[in-house]
Image 1 (tube, rainbow, N blue to C red):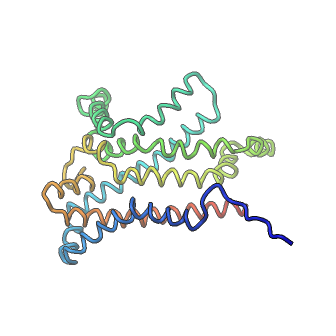
Image 2 (spheres, helix red, strand yellow; image 1 turned 30 degrees about the horizontal axis):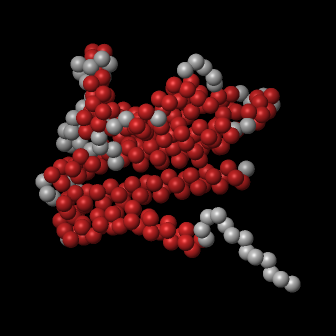
Amino acid sequence: MAKGWKKRSIIPGFGISMGFTVMYLSLIVLFPLSAIFIKTSGMGWAKFWQTVTDPRVIAAYKVSFGTAFGAGVINTIFGFIVAWVLVRYTFPGKKLVDALVDLPFALPTAVAGIALTTIYSQNGWIGSMLEPMGIKIAFTPLGIMLALTFIGIPFVVRTLQPVIEELEKEVEEAAVSLGARRWRTFWKVLFPELLPAMLTGFTLAFARAVGEYGSVVFISGNMPMKTEIAPLLIMTKLEQYDYMGATAIAMVMLIISFLLLLLINFLQWRSNRHATSL
């Protein structure tokens, strides 16, 4: 009996595809990141520890990760609301609103930072109205969080939209017909399905916010120990030709970011596994 010919795949085989993937990731990601570790290894442990534990550096870490986390949480909540409205409702100007969501992708971050600073500064249109109430946004951590929220909102909205579109309205209607109220329907029926996508959106927004520089450098005021972010401190080290100090700060940011993203991905895996088992 003659053996049938093996069907050829349109996409190259596993060996070629995997080799290309490893080569691509190595050139774009692994080699540049490994250069940070190699450069930092030349400064010695004592110098490295002194650099990364400097009070100014610690304060910059707190500002960067704290504001990025806060902006990620805000984007997750309000990004869900925006995505839900765009998917579930029809209203005049819907396409315009949908296009505006992608504006932070196209807008240069420096332009966004200047615009936000102009509006929310003490003499700005909104800032002048908030000043009598004792609310100051520009040149404070609150202003940094505002800028990070602006640049991170598209990640959450675009991640949640396809998931919301796939939700079956019949399941919600069945829950309501069985006597469940709207909040219980959302918490018990919709939220388990949306949680993995919400975690993914939060991860993308958080990762984008941690390394943001252009939009933050204008609205933060760059005050050491108060509103100075870690990326700006790295740029300061580079301008001072302290390349090892810059790579040391960058390496700590890289390690912390990787551990946080690993934790979030683990939570996402757990939520996916729980949703599949239901």
